[in-house]
Image (cartoon, rainbow, N blue to C red):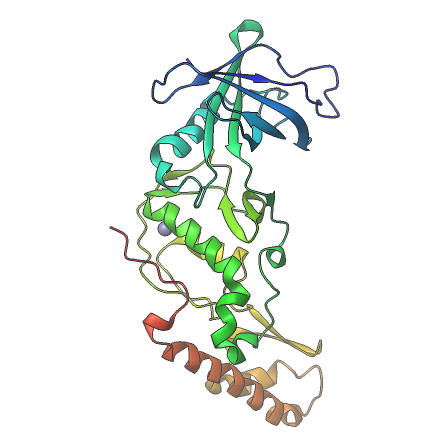
Amino acid sequence: MTSLRLGPGPSPWDSPDRKLPTGELTRYDVQSSPPQSYSINNLELLVDDTGTAVYRGSLKLPDSPELEKVVVKTDFFAETLRQSAFQHEVDMYELHLSSLQGLSIPYCYGLFQHKGEGDKVSSFLVLEDCGDRIKDVSSLANSFKYGYIFHLVNDVYSVFAGRLKALDALYEIHCAGYTHGDLSLHNITNRDGEPFFIDLETAEPHKCEMTERIIVGEERRRIECDEIDICCMLLEIWADVDVKVKDLFVFRRAYLRRENIDFLLSLLIHRNRNTEVFRPFVEQLVEKIEAEREYYRNVPPEKRLILPPAPK
Ligand SMILES: [Zn+2]
């Protein structure tokens, strides 16, 4: 049986009297392994929440002189313990998605359990430290400006590399047969430009139907996977739904088509009763958007930036 000892660490601010357990925690083993003793020290609170507290610390493995930087996620301070959710999550790391550890998801050192009063089991999931959770898309990649891609196709991969890597990482999870189940930017971490997906408590089996290749900045279109579509929205990979014009007008991008010019002018009636004064301007804008559409339609599949292999 593998066990873990935790060094002293702070408690969440609204649970100051409850201290982390000092005794041995036992590993919830998905496969039996030879007995080993782990210890984690230098614990600092990363997420100060009694529902789910998260620590950073240094893991000492018995067979290595090095200290590993790890993150410990626990429900120890929570009113309602989530033993089965943690067991589901560690099964995702160690069984179902084990080939993606260190790639799309952190390496997992195991789930350790503490038996408290009334045999209530609290959980401590120990993962490789894969950097901070991303707060906004720009922290993962440079900002995406409307129309920018049009002029910088050759450089676009470096500009958007972080976002594309994140989308690829999620696609790998799908190809392995699962959804993440709780997508938000908060559940993606960034370590030196490498994205990782965390919080797999609600991952579910999934057969991905997605076979198309997506290019950053193209108009949102129907693709065959809802979660990939949501991820494209979160990562601002699809073009903006609205096209803002100098803070004066906002048009739905989908309406900006040659056959809609009269309709678009009618939307501007509150600006000027004689909407014809806007015609040259609206025509110019529509031509620009139609030219972008034409461009994206003509990008050959092999030149598209996201190149998912067909799921097996
Ligand atoms: Zn999918």
